[in-house]
Image (cartoon, rainbow, N blue to C red):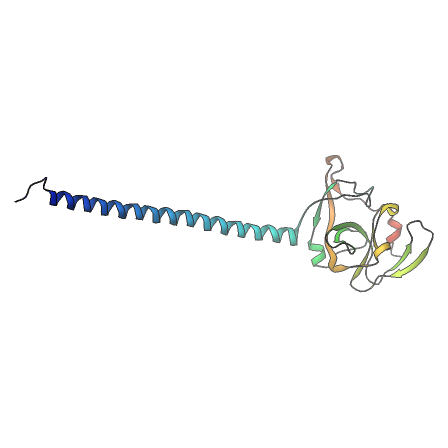
Length: 197
């Protein structure tokens, strides 16, 4: 005989409910775990993807830099913000008179901002910072001669010699800050230093 309240039926119903509830709970955990893991992996993937894009943009296209130090005054003042493009160095488009950012030959952890005075094969009139001693130097193949616009207050190729072309990181051509000086950079006050004569 079947009674609705019999202990056997109640036990079967409880067993089915517990089993169904347990399966539902496990399914919910699996679904949530998949969702969380999926979102995490997507986020990591997007981060890596956009990180690679940003790296390529800064490495090959250019970036914004803040210059410090007095060596490029009056063209670039301390704390001026400039834009440097990197395509010129990849296509050997650096010319005499360009302002470049390069790894320092004396301290590879720091960058320098100097003007290109001579390219490979050029004859350079060198002088000591005080101007007492003058001599001529030739820029060897694969090198450039860099000097600051502020010749009295610049550590440059007059101290460490010609700089390998491979140390050049980019060419500065646009001043962004301060806004009252926004625009393309002007010519060197020492223009006679890199004439074609």
